[in-house]
Length: 227
Image 1: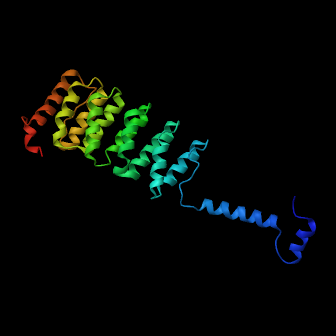
Image 2: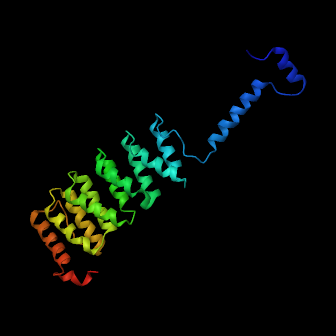
Image 3: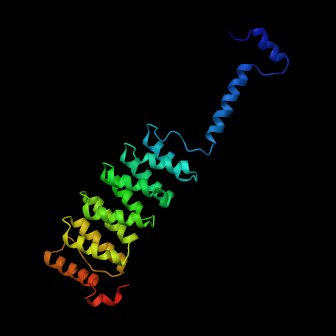
């Protein structure tokens, strides 16, 4: 079965460490080397949330393609905080490479906050396909939180040609949050302040939205400021 006491003693008499000690030393070296590896950590699924968040930060600091894939995979984490962090880091880390996966999360994740984060990260990508996708969400998505994020993202990623859609949304969307974000997106594109307040009286809101519409249509006093 094992080596005899006599054989182990012989190792010692010859100045060699026993085999059992060598095995333990080798295991320790392997453990140390695995901790120093550049490979993405394998415990993103650790039970502790803080540990998973720490692992995501280590992944985001790496350049390997595998690290982006691991971040995107972690966007499905059952913990909403971890999932949002993974989406945010994937957007910051991946650029256009992350667009297809961010679109899937934005369209299909069951959690509003995670979808909202994916929509906002799409605005970082400077991808024409992402802009078309965001317009679709703004027009049709049932979640006002997602529509509001889409309006903000279009304001960052879009241009003058997108202001007509934003004005339509500002006039017709049932959510005050979405209407306000749509006007804010036009302001970002136009560099004009319309002073729209969704909490103001209906008359004041109509006056502000009329000013927005005049600017978009090129019929108002601010027409000279259009790009």
